[in-house]
Image (tube, rainbow, N blue to C red; front, side):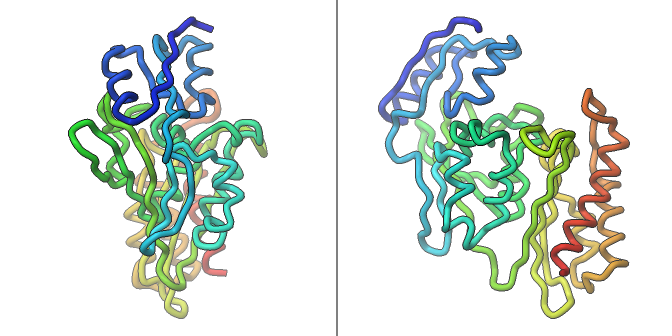
Length: 283
């Protein structure tokens, strides 16, 4: 592993200044399950790790004013097991339980999972489907960002070097909403998704009155399948419309070929998984 300096600031202002002052080789350290691996494999030139673990207030899950707030340093294992998450937004708990191994989930944080900017991140599709926004600290003043606008490309987000993700804000789903998350990978566990799909729909009797379908690992960034959403909106969630939505999702994604599989196989996975997800919601 490459040698690097290590800083452990006590507050957000110190952390922002430390990363900015140490230049492009400085990175914020959350759980370290990605950053330290990339440093070991020399795919990231880590010169200084700015550990956010000593900053109070960045860890926790609570409900306030009809919204669930999850601190950016909250461990994925804590999200998986949270009664609050399982009660109101179980899709997020399901996705957390499929992220890596138990050892990884006990180290990895939700903020790190998002800020890595990986198109295949397991927590991103359900959070976008749930309408999550991000709370961000900046020396110029705090702000909120819609998660849909957060990603610019693989490993790229809109955060500036001195900005820090502090929490994720998730509105409680509307009454009667149904949601599901599916992931397909080469291994049953501890593997990166070839494709993952999250969906949330609202049904009035058999008619879909609204919903979101989000694809992971099917484009340079997590992708809202808006054509698929349009195919089911205002219609019966029957087999004919589910097939239309699945075909639309396959047509609007832009997957790549890599060592795991081809772009054509990923496109077919999108079609199959969107269909399975919507059928599970209909049931």
